[in-house]
Image (cartoon, rainbow, N blue to C red; front, side, top):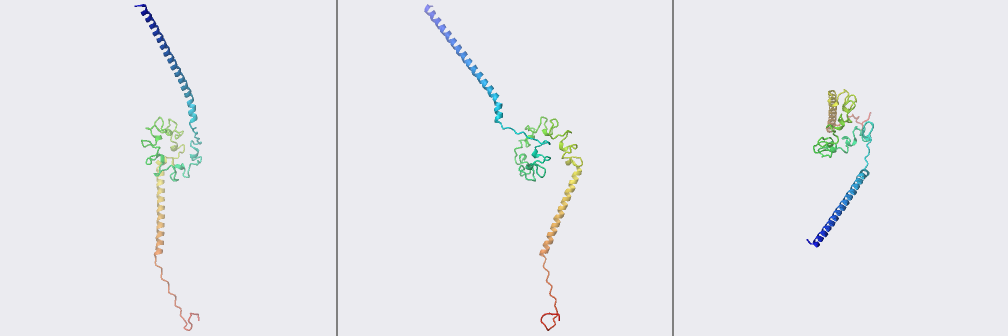
Length: 247
C-alpha cells in the first residue's frame, strides 16, 4: 500500500471519528433538552394539581348546612316545633292530599315516586331509587337495610331501646294505641273503628231518609187540589128593607 493511500485512510478515519463524536454530542444535547422539558412539565403539573382543589372549591357553589331542630328534623317540617310547612292535618303541606299539595299527582300519590306518572324518583327496577338495593341507593346501608332503620348503623328511626321509634311502647310511638299495641294490629281498635263507621253510616242513612220524607211531604202538599170554598150562610131578610138589618 502506498503512502498516499495510508494518509487518505487516516484522514478518512479521523473524519469519521469526528462525525461520530458530533452525532453523540447532538444526541446527548437532545436528550438533555427532552429531560429538561419533561422536568418542567412535571413541575407545571404539580403546580396545577396543587392549585386545582382551591380553584374547584372556589368555583363550586357553597353547600348550605342544613339546620335541624331539637327533634332531629328540619324546623319548617317539624310538628312539635310548629313548622310553617305543616298543614292543619299535621302533614307536610306540599304532600297533603286533603290540602291538594303541589307534590300530589292525579293518582293521589307523591308525584316523584308515582309509577303511573313515571316519577323521577323511580329506578329501572320499579322501586324508589334511594331505597333500591340493586341500584345502590343512597338510603341503603352496607348491611342491605334502610339506613334510617338499621340498628348497626344507628339509624335515626331506631330509638334507645333498639326498636323502631314509632312502634316503641316505652317511647310512646305514634303507632302505639291506647291499648299499648301497634295500632294497625290491635283488635280492640279495629272493632272500635268498625263500630264508629257503622254508627256514622246509620246516622247518614237516617239523615237521608228524613230528607227524602221531607221532600215527599213538600211535593204532596204542592200537588194536592185546593178545597172548595164554603158557601156563605143565608141570612133571613125582613121583607121591608133590601139590606139585611137587625130589625
